[in-house]
Length: 52
Length: 212
Length: 225
Image: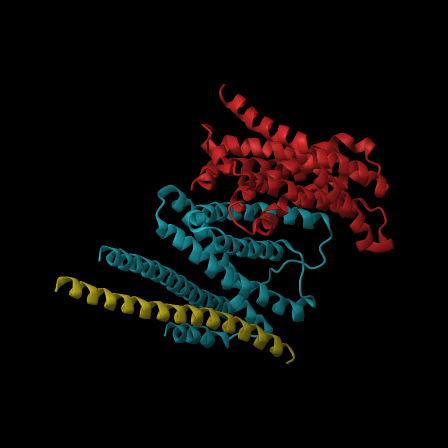
């Protein structure tokens, strides 16, 4: 049926939007997690240096 | 991860129904409800922020707006796609559509506001706008409805009957979307909290450097 | 009654500074005049005098030119460096809001009177028989959108992109006021019975009251730093 085109379009747009948004969240989260662990490492080093 | 779960959720029951294009409804209706819910959350969170001054509520308000805008965009796109084959028009100025469009604009404006304002005032001002924006929604809806009853309405509103299996499918889709919504909201809040944590940690490092 | 003298003082300050330069009202009037002219070109020769449509044009002129005035209400304070002084005054924030609102409202009303006059000439509209209801609707509608504009002017005055931000914040929220005002003006200008205006009147009054209340509750937070 001709209408299937519309249905397909609607679904694909919706899921694309959701996926893009979630993907961006996910990527940003990963980057931040990496930064947090990096910072924690440097903090650890500094604490050890400060103790010794 | 969680994405796979609800994808399965929705696809299974959908095949039960008749009328191909009708299936857009399963995305459209839950998204609309969730968008309005999101902005209601923003409204409450904004009020709580102004009372308690706890930045946690500002975070919730902000993230709810973003999530709400995503779902509102979905509503505004799936709506016309559904309308074109059924009513043969892309858009009508009926109260529900128009109010949803205004809603979208209001909360996009919220996000613009957050971008341009300085940090120290950002939470306050956003909260005020979050409150004003939501209060405006019922007023806008009734104004547009009054406006439309004076003009002859070309296309009648969308009420139509749903058979048994369709209702079940809708319910399942609804639950699935609610789940999706809260997952996205929580992820976004977690992201925001991580950002704040990074800033805190940076400050600690800065302080430690100064001490040396 | 310490409230009124304080209120009056701030209003008087704005009034006097405007009286000296007359820039705000002058620019607003010129702008609204231009808008009325441009709409004529926008619609071409198909513009017959249809009350519903020209009411819309009139209100577009009111709102857009009113926006320039509203934007300047707080950004002027920021630019001149008098904002801190204003906030530090021993008055409640809502008093500041009201004072600014009344100032903007008065200037905008002056602009609107002149605009209606020009409008009646350019669009060959008969306005005189309808002056009282028209004035009522104009006052209520203007109060509504200037209240919104003043709140958002205070909000956006802190930013760099202030005029654009003001417009983006302003329009979604002012939709009910604009619809109600345009519809009522259209009804009035077409000479139909005034009872048709009542539902719109209720919306306008409701809107004004609600947003004055909201501003009362929240304006303190806007001036916090």
